[in-house]
Image 1 (tube, rainbow, N blue to C red):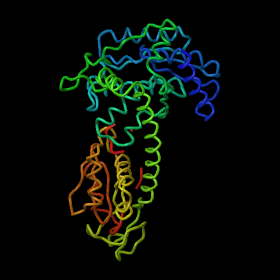
Image 2 (image 1 turned 90 degrees about the horizontal axis):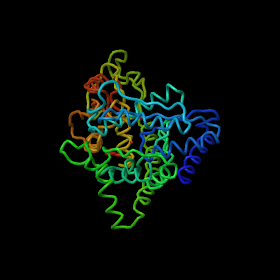
Image 3 (image 1 turned 135 degrees about the horizontal axis):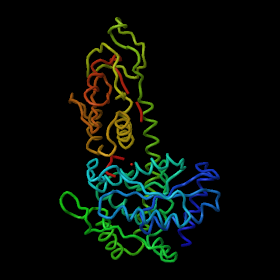
Image 4 (image 1 turned 180 degrees about the vertical axis):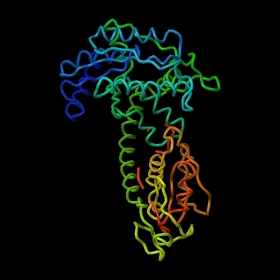
Length: 400
């Protein structure tokens, strides 16, 4: 119990020190009734008042299995008994979330959970929502990233702080949360959907990847490599996160340098019959397009000449950030899409537009890369007044 309380106390004290929290603020614990979140709820109930904070709890009923509402109500009742207030159950309107955004039932449940937790935080004016992810969850996340061939950002795993969602227990082992519940006499719920042979399956009928990792892969790795595997994988996440944060910051600077305003004509066209430059322009040659006639409306316009000589790691990150700003779907934007954008810069031979999930489209004209939702990118490129130049700026199988 001491390890869980110490982790919760240190995390909340850090938030007080950095100004994320103030005395009297409310924090909510997301509690499923499992050992990890129950231990966090108990630790928060003990620590928060001693730090001058208020603490409540919310339990999300995903509606994916029979009896799930009773489980959530029981978890909320336990939290209320620990002194957490409010302590309430959140649930979807209708029959749960079996569909989702292409990530299957597990992804749909995750999206629903975060939406409901964010709404509860807003309703109650909570400064943050505490999540019970542990070191074991972090190790699983790193392995999933490796198995999917992901980049540094995915290997960075779960961040301790992501907006209003906070994870105090990423340095705590799952055995410690289970032991904490035993010491306090808290009966933890074993979610059958977390089991490799549980009711939720992939489209092919196989075990969910995370469940299979938890039950089969990590134990085998520990037997083969020693008991320190979980700790080592969590350490890898910490190291990768530092690297990914720096690379993302440098990529944003690159995007800002490549950004060009599109609010004035630069070549022959209405309002500028002589083709005199009157807007921002960073390039000098019109090598891959024709004269434009009207200002475009691309969400993101990138100067090819600025990006093409950048280091590939930064350039591809910059392109991914630009695609997201233009409206691409973060969850569906994959390495193959970023490679297609990169080819418009580094392997240009007059190819047509690149279609990104969102939907978003990217097209190269006049030494520029135009990104915007749907076919409007192409229209913006054809109507762009700047002629010869270009440019703009800005979490498991992503490019970065």
